[in-house]
Image (cartoon, rainbow, N blue to C red; front, side, top):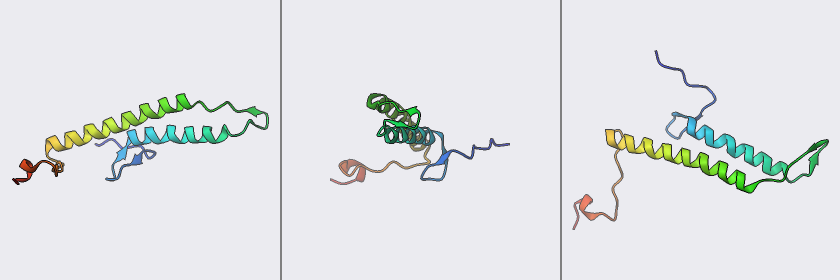
Length: 99
């Protein structure tokens, strides 16, 4: 019996569900909402903090590094198992059989 994937995971371009893409998108939208709200001093009785650029940058850089690292690992594994053929480098003439 296969394990059912959660409904809330985003899909990659190939149609597979991706936890790492979901983990990147959630902090992105949270940061965008906080950035938009930081334009206002307060909303009624609720005081809004100043937007912390350093914290937002650290959060996004960590989640994007996770995402890109995961994609690199998946691609490398697919090439190693033969599920994906690595593109030929146009600068490498030996690989193409040219002069």
